[in-house]
Length: 313
Image 1 (tube, rainbow, N blue to C red):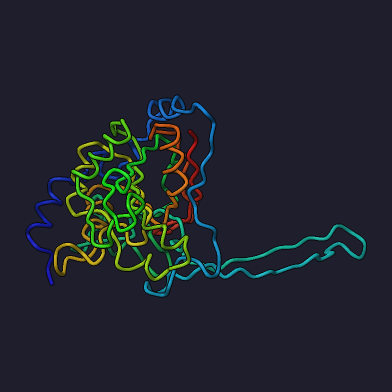
Image 2: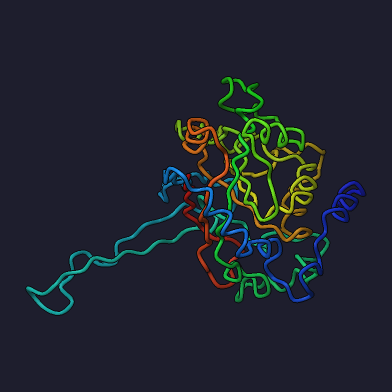
């Protein structure tokens, strides 16, 4: 079924093709300027470090609902092996087979296409079986360091089934919700920021209920990309597996936010970020902006990459 006119109208309003040149391959990460990084460093006060990644484990967040996105399979390839002879120093080594987007990760710009095109009007056919994402591989992303802003929508609305801890499963996060979270945090999202949107959905996974975490899920509304575009946000990450509201808010329009962010805006997006501890830390310290280090693993040709982000308050 062709994408509806409503989608194409939204796409036109947020499109960044050509903004940073015809050969650009990093999109809104161009907004991570030295000035933005210096301003990010100035947010550090207490030095409190909050990890945002899920552990990489064989019984991880993936349930098999997404074909090929397998949890990490950890295998030992050597155990205390004295490779230089008896009595010498021994080494242990291991290997992992996993989906690059198995746990906490960034979606790269080649992860999604629509109408036969990728970001900056590249053909979708530049993603190949042997070369992967030849034109827009995740390895092209620069070091991802900037001011992070937590928009704790679950806390701002306080209307979930468990109080302020979690949004209802059918809640689409709107621009109005994002503004309400700004007001809660006393912060204004500005160009070059990396926005983290907390829905509280991660609580299901942390409690051991993977199925409830995966589906159904609150997430970003199809209206949210215009809000991020107007703020000139560098990247967005959430505490859900699907990133956007799932099932979709518009019948038969699947993954429209993915397409608007990755294809039209050239903005990478993160999923499965654990924002629970960060939500508590920001509430305790009374501030929702911090230094964020979240560089993607540079897998050549990857359509995404695992990341171990750290917020420093």
